[in-house]
Length: 229
Ligand code: SF4
View 1: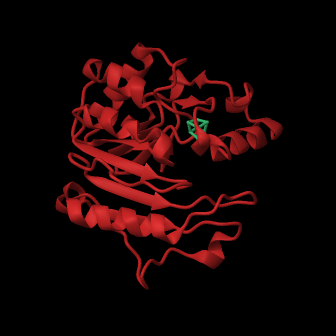
View 2: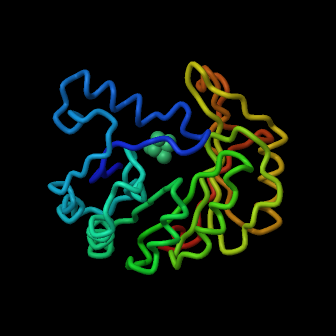
């Protein structure tokens, strides 16, 4: 499930080109949703900061699906409040994903890193591969890569200290193609480094037609910390 104590964002790289959150925010604004009265402008929702504390059953929570928690317009003390809630809810597993890895690296020492917080960076092509080094410098218990939407080859991934890799192609009307050899290369790198590999989808204009099989099977591997839980 998702938890959005912040909404809105701005684009930073090619992976943002067809941002799903932006499209969804525009739709919600048009529908008159109060949360989206600012459209896709960064907006804090402090009334939602404590919501995970009210969930008794353990949940896997994707944090800020409608924003980027390390956006430069989000103050450090607000990010600290988000992390405090995650720290105080060990029954849940929180997945945080950013493209602002430089700010993540800058702020990491000011944040608590409980083991129920999984921290990831998005890497869509080789131009932004340095995000992985920033992630590796953080003390998160689980560090993961979202290689999605994959729009170029990624050779020589620095996978040391990385616990999980997710790969997926772009979907939707203007989806950019993902080549099989790019996926194969990442798969081999993950096998060599013994990193769990999750293949999400081929994507394309009709993702229901392309599916999510690679070499005739699906790959749903997860970090061992979850399997052990
Ligand atoms: S960082 Fe994420 S939420 Fe922000 S514009 Fe890019 S894709 Fe959209």
